[in-house]
Image 1 (cartoon, rainbow, N blue to C red):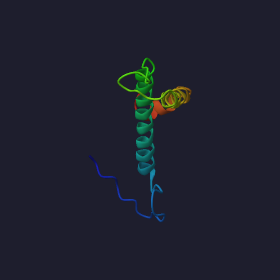
Image 2 (cartoon, rainbow, N blue to C red):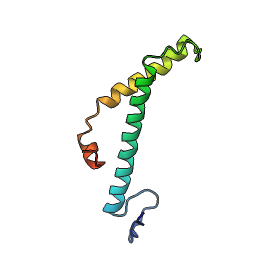
Image 3 (cartoon, helix red, strand yellow):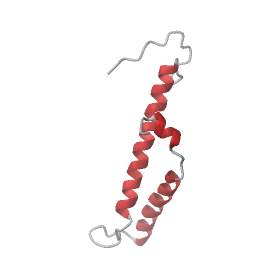
Length: 94
């Protein structure tokens, strides 16, 4: 692991980037996390789709089952609608 260079002249405390390295590192980290969560939601969507959560061994109420599946389905639809062209390029996936 390399240590980021010192950001001399940085006057704003907190998360304000001091140079291009900081911007690249922060954006890269955020986009990689986004790609990971997008993939995780996709797996959850695929795993939950065939399940009847009201049956054994889950025994959820119909309301809870609908709430969970609707949340994951809505998120999956929204995430799939995102144009990943530049995100993939910036995260090295393309």
